[in-house]
Each structure stands twice: as C-alpha cells, then as structure tokens.
Image (cartoon, rainbow, N blue to C red):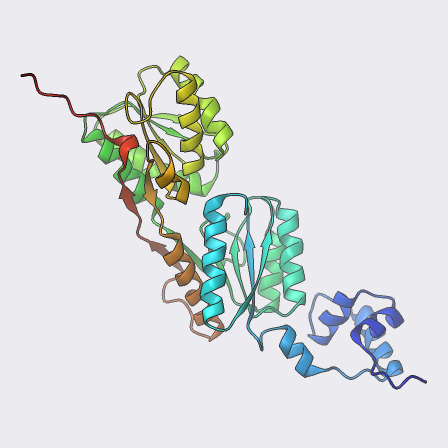
Amino acid sequence: MSDRRPTINDVAAHAKVSKSTVSLVLRKSPLVKRETRETVHASMAALGYVRNRAAATLRGSGTGLIGLIINDLRNPFFTEFAASVQMALADRGFATVIANCDEDPGIQNQTIQSMLEHDVAGLVISPCYGDGDEGFRAIARAGVPALQVLRRTPARAHPLPFFSHDYASGSLMAARHLLEQGIHNVAFVGGLEGRDITAERMSGYLSEMQAMGHATVVRPGPSTRAFGREIVQDLLTTAPEVNAAICFNDLVALGMYAGLGEAGRTPGGDFFIIGFDDIEEARLAYPPLSTIRCDVTLFGALSAKRLLDMIAHKAPQDPTELLPVELVARASSHKPRETPRQ
C-alpha cells in the first residue's frame, strides 16, 4: 500500500466524478445532488482522504483570489479597466484571475461556476447581455461578494451592487458643447438597440437636443470601428444635413475618421466628432479625438476597493453608484474660427 497521501484527484477517480464536483462537496455546495455527495464521501472514507485545509486556503480566499470577468477584452477600454483592477488588487495583496467572455453569456455562466469552484473570495463582473441568470443564481447560492460594473443586465432575482459612470451627463455635455458652437445637426452613432448602456449613453444627447428644439438622428449599431466606417456613407446619403456625431464609444468615432476620409470629409474641419471613453488612441489620433473621459484608472481602483469592502462585510452605502465623467474637447469637435477680414 502506498504511503502517499490521497488527493482530491484520487477521490474524483474513485467516485467516478470530476475534481470540481469533489471540490463542491468539500465546500458543502447545494449544487451537488445528495446521491453524488454520498458517493464522494464514501470514496473519501475508503481512501482515507483528509482535506488539506491549508492548501485549500492557499487556493482561495485566504490569499485573496479575486475573479474578474470581462465581456470583451478586445475593446481597449475594458483591457485598461482589467489592468487597473488587477494592479489595485495586487497593491492590497490579492491575486486576480481574469476571464474574457467574448460577449457570450454561456461562457460567462461557465466561467462564474469555475471561479466559484476555485473558492474565489469575490467577483467583479462586467457582464455579457443575454441569459446570464444561471451564473448570477450560482453567485447568490454561494454567498460570494460580487460587484457588477460598467454594464447592468436586466433586473433579475439576485441583483448585484452596481458601479459605473454617469453616462447620461456625458452625452449631455457633448451635445451642449456642439450646440454652443452653432452646430445643430448632430447624430448619435453606435450602440446596439435595446441595451441599457446604449440608452444611458444616448439619453443626455436626446434630452439636450429636444430641449433646444433640434431634430435628433440616431444610427444604432455595433460598437466597432467597422460600423463607424460603414455608417458614414449612410449618414451622407440619408441625412446629408448632419455635420456632427456623438459616438457610442471611441472605436466607433475612430472608424468614422476612416469613413470621412474616404468621402473627402475632414474630422474637425467640416464634420465634428465626439467619442466616449477616452482610450489612449483618442489622444494620439489625428486630429486628436474629442471624447467623454471615463477615468478608467480611477474607476478600476475604486471598483477594487468597493469589492474588498464587501468582502470585509461592509455593505455598499448605495447599491448603485455612478462616477462623474468629463468632456475632453480636442480638435475633432471645435468649429474653425473665421479669419477676420482686413
């Protein structure tokens, strides 16, 4: 007989279940059926398995393992956010497991379950849209502190505290900036219909334009460069009076740069553009892109602090908190000054 101490893998093999199932049994998770739980306990007894609680602690919340789930890490804004959260948690002695769900709620549910099985101390989730209820129900059953950020999925039975930016005031500032220069034919471009975040980012634009008696032009679509480039020709054809756009994000705005160039138009010359997020490329583009700055470094640090407060059993004072944004007016949105006659 071997003197080697039986491991969780040995128990899983003996019980003919997965390692994750054994882990759930050890954590007394309600996700495991009674019959399966009894089989696993019988295998533990037969093998003489004794749980190594020190190792379990190192795997999970004892070291401060945090799960960070992002809907789309290909978007530079979310990449910057993830890096900011990870660094802020590292400063507090916590390790971070980062997952990209690629806008797939099925992958999101699977990722949440996997992170819970690895005993994460808490979760920060920028969610996918779609049927993510299974993962959110698993979080509620596990009792793990979790914070929903940047996007809020539709109301569910187990809502999470929500932390984001004041998007509505951002598009209001953008619209006001253009209107004050006498630029009245402004479109809102990008953002998928039926999404809360699209409605939030567009609401300030709609209210300001309507309050000032100006028509609104909305062109919803994916928040990508490709859409921004493609929509330019549509606008020039179907709404030729439009000479300015507030974009759902900077990627759409930078895509419009390309479309305008192809059409012989000039950003900041005869067509005015404002983006949203203030990714690094907004500042480096030519001409530099005006945008609504959502301070992602600060937001990431505050998101980490908010979650750690929840882990320390400090309930959020407000389950919904919105961080202020600011308009960064660069060359793409400034109407050229007329040269005075001599």
